[in-house]
Length: 193
Image 1 (tube, rainbow, N blue to C red):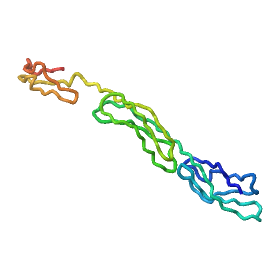
Image 2 (image 1 turned 90 degrees about the horizontal axis):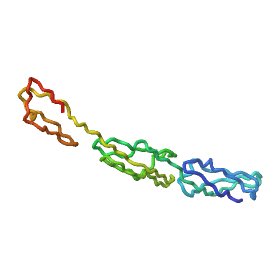
Image 3 (image 1 turned 60 degrees about the vertical axis):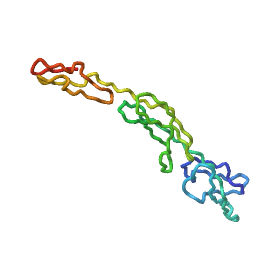
């Protein structure tokens, strides 16, 4: 008998989904797979199948058939690539969809980790034995933070100097009094910077 040929499937599919057709040059009969489960990893895989003639004068026969398994498709979805500067490192957030066989998401290369404000180009990509190559061009955007030009309001007590009031220091800069020796001229003086 002539074995079925040109059998193809996609990674994650069941072997039973691969149709076996009897060659017209064969005696009448049917083909059936001897195994169950998936078609295995991407590549060329071999499975056992049985040919059962309709004419009972001929005994069933077992044959090894090849199935060409193609890679499955996954998609990288960028879910968040824009942040506001906060002094911490940020990376592009993403999800990967399309996995089969209960596979975990394949690793994604090309992400960037940045702290300072700016726009950083990145290409997220996947290379995997069972999934088609996938890539997404995107950017990590870290927006500048606005710094207030007024720390807060301070209340000085009569007799105190402005220099006795401690102004804050932060990663954005240092505040200093222009006239630290000035004194309030009344019981309380509200200083609005």
